[in-house]
Image (cartoon, rainbow over all chains, first blue to last red):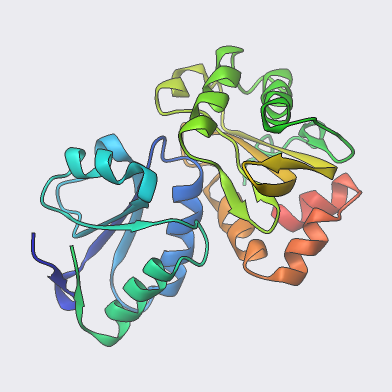
Length: 102
Length: 141
């Protein structure tokens, strides 16, 4: 699907298998970085990504499962749990405006 | 934070393990012994690790179970196990394991603190080199 404009991003989901480890850490960081932007950040298991998610972040190794579980969502895969360039780009796009590619 | 989330008995700072599997088994054992999880959770931690490494940077890994294994969790709990000699973690060197058992959100503030620590190289080094249980408790809670 096409990307999403930063002004249409209201909810970001950080998804991982169990939703109890790395996704929690990343979500806490994102929440802090985006606290003035009005964007909500939640962490969930890949199998329960909510319908109102605008962007889904997940580890590249889980991207296929996330795509199957939440078809049509903009998915941003990352490799490193803290400090991944893809996540930094997403934060900058939300803060400065622009499009997040699917 | 709930008092029983990080039990001082679940902080072991002078351990060694020949490999990643042994290190994870040790973390799982600690969680079993403090009454946080049932035995099968340990295997689920190994299964989870085989799918994607729980290495999070700065010599720290956060082993935990799979989504399906949440039924083996009796209460949210964290353990901290330090391996001063390091453990090969699929090519990374891990000195500190923060083992997690969580079916609710009680551990979220602790992981948020851990993320902050790991993004600050000096604090990460202090945590990796901590030799007193009280130091670790203070840093993380």
